[in-house]
Every structure is written in C-alpha cells, then in structure tokens.
Image 1: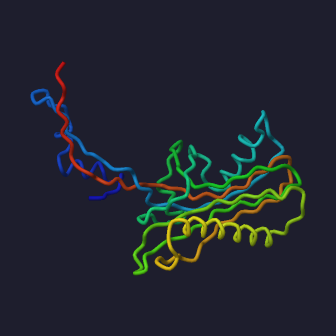
Image 2 (image 1 turned 120 degrees about the horizontal axis):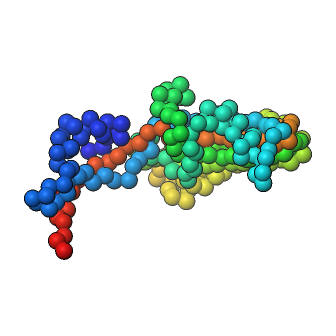
Image 3 (image 1 turned 180 degrees about the vertical axis):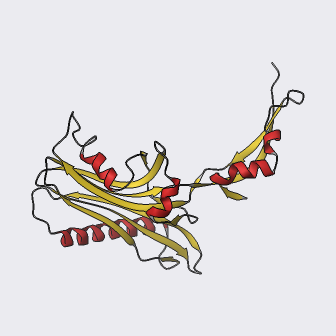
Length: 232
C-alpha cells in the first residue's frame, strides 16, 4: 500500500501501530513498519535572479546575490538541497500558491536546480527542462529533468536569443537522457517543457537560478517487521 507521509500519523493511529511498535519486554521483539525509499510527489517550479554591490568573503555571492535570487524565487527560508534529475511517475506539478501551505521556516527543500553566479556586465542564463516517457500503449513510466547554465561574459546576448539557445541545449540533454534508456520505436516521449531565467548583471555580483522543488513525498509500506532481540 502507498500513502503520503503527511497521512502516516493518522494511518498508524487507525491500525494501532503505536501499541505494536513499542518494545515488548516479555517477547524480546520490536514491531514496526518497513518503508521503502521515499518517492518525491508534489513539486513546483520557480526561478529568480538578482544582483547587489554587497559581497563579503571569498564567496561574495553566497550571502548576497544568491540569497536575493532565492528570495526572488520564494524559497529563501529553506535549507536547499540538490537532486539529480529523475522524476517519478507518481509526481505531479502544483503552482507556488498551492505549494505555499507546505512551507515551513528552516525546513529542508530538495530541488533539481540550475544556478549561476556572475559579475557586473556579464549575462547569465539558467534553465530546467522536463520530459516524460510512456509505453507504446500510453502508460506513464516516469520523467527526467535537465539543467542548463551559461555565462555569456561581457558579450551582448539579447534575452530572446539566450532563451532559444537554452531551449535547444535543454532539448539535446533531455533527448540524450531518454534515448540512452529507451528505444524511441517502442516508447513515447512527451514534448519537453522549459523554465528559463535570464539576467544582465548591473551591479558587482549577480545570480540567476531555476529550481524544481519537492514539497512532499510518498512512502511505500513494504511490511510489518518483527525482529527478535538477541540475548547476550
């Protein structure tokens, strides 16, 4: 059976697992749920950029423009962790306003993120693309994401051209991911979707980022375990 982590407490109460999970001194056994690897479920996609003249230390971006970009993306009060790029078939996208109810100050948020720092006069472009794979009968197998980042330096790069270049690069990456794993004659690939950010840095330091952010998870219930204790 599969259930969401935010339903776990209710589920345990209904099945009286609180009683079963306690240490039984007479039997010398521990009862409990065995859960499979957690599966990322709902996510939202966000992006942000900003620049500033403030930048202390050896990494002038970390507490300056990067933090401002996180604020622009509405994820500044999370501890941000980065994933690689596989999307479970159970996962689904929600918008930022829907995701907001899961926000908690200081919580860990796991992301598929592309972020890039630059200096005054440079042009930055970041992006995340997504693609889904189905069987020839249309059953969803799962999806993949790809990250893109490019610093054009002081070269003049119009936003429209930078975005087109990002889409082409992301498309190449996504098709590479699926074609390495699946035969196109036997599977269906959806049209990729893209989220792209662009920034011309006007101040000393600038950051651009795009992130796919998970807000909750599914925990597969494998079994109820009973492990006998070992007498010494």
